[in-house]
Length: 332
Image 1 (cartoon, rainbow, N blue to C red):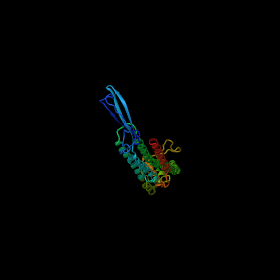
Image 2 (tube, rainbow, N blue to C red):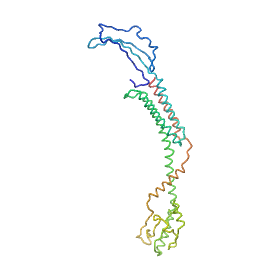
Image 3 (spheres, one colour):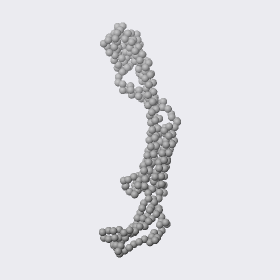
Image 4 (spheres, one colour):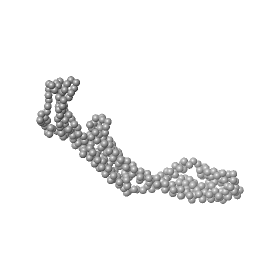
């Protein structure tokens, strides 16, 4: 029975019996001191903690036979397993706690330490299982190694929680603030567009002919330097007297024709047409700009993570309680 391995005790029996002669021919019995030298006997992996003798008669089809049996109670020496398995596992688990005192910004150091301890525990478990018979039930050493692996793996997952808490959550919060700031910055541009559209409407009602290009507020706020330069260098006057940019200097997505507007006072049948072009490039540029703003404004966190503070206490205490329960259950 290896359920308690390597903290188990085994009972070994030596039996002496005559298979050719029945009790009518041979009678065997133990002397007053049948076993000698047991106290001086030494085994490399076991300690003899007791023995007992017994004699009985076994009745078979061919007759009754005398049987003498000697039972040894052997307890496995745990010293080898302490230095070979238990102590290395304890040290590996304690080594995984070092990451709680490493700055959470040192991602490579903490991840490398966590992965190394996990792989080391896997190697120890594989070595122990290779020296045992292939049995289906769980042994005591399996429980200990699995729990050590759980503690080591939990220390690695703890850093994942730390990293998400400090960088993922803050990045989302910062992105939200950046979007709100951009929306606030775009609000003053709406009256300018309305004023420009009103001026073009007045010029059209005055009898001027031809398309008049109105200037969009987004051109002045455009992050593309070439567009802003062309906006400042090329200007012309419309028939209504309003100074506008030369339409030939701008791409079609930044031009709006007077014929594309619908003014209720002049021509109710005309419709307002927006020819800014596809929205995907604009969204992509806004996303990249927001990401750069978030990265530049990312705070340099120097204080210790609250999760690390709790882990420095929770992990050692939990492991201590596990060891206390384990050794009390299997040894005492």
